[in-house]
Amino acid sequence: MNPHNDQIQMLRAAELQFRLAVAVNFAAASHNQPLDLPTTWTYGKHSVANYEIALTPEGASFAATLLEHSAMYFMAMQIELALIAWTSGKPTTHSDPEVRASFQISRHIRNGFAHYPLQPVWEIRNTDDRQIYSVRDIITLDATDVHGKPFKWQDFGGPLALLRLSEFVRTQILQDNGVFGSNRDASSGPLPSIEYLQQGPLTLKKLREKTNG
Image (cartoon, rainbow, N blue to C red; front, side, top):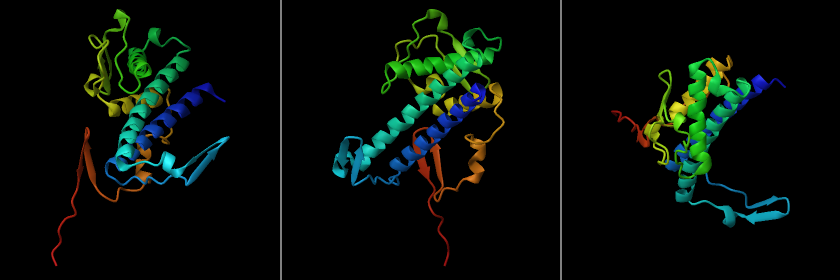
């Protein structure tokens, strides 16, 4: 196996997992997510009945939010690991400032999730790391005064900024020329049956236009 290609494939996988988590969260919030589970599930010596693992719509919606949340953390972690591997373990001293910034942003996000996964808190103990990190117009993390504070999406631009950072690292730094796993393959997928617009956590649904006759 080619270690370089392995990192590309894992970044693709992390992006796909995030996109699926977004779809599940969106479907659960719209009450369109199927909640069917096995009547009986056996795994090794353990077995559960449906009533033991069944989900309510409210429980599914809450869990789907956490799923998207954890997929974002997984993506940050994979960006960090890819850059460590690509720089032979020396991302902080790389000559390209965008490589250094990409690594530091992903590392600080990963650290916050790792210490407090369900309620992330910035964990930037080294005062030298309390800087402003930017990668083009994709993502900016102002880490000057966030240590010990809860995550806010405004601190780094939110989940889409992190998705774009992963795509940037994969295509511009690791030089992935493929389309699988990126937003470029969306044209081959099915179109939504209902038109939605999402702005942050707010979702707008397009109503069916009234026709004459």
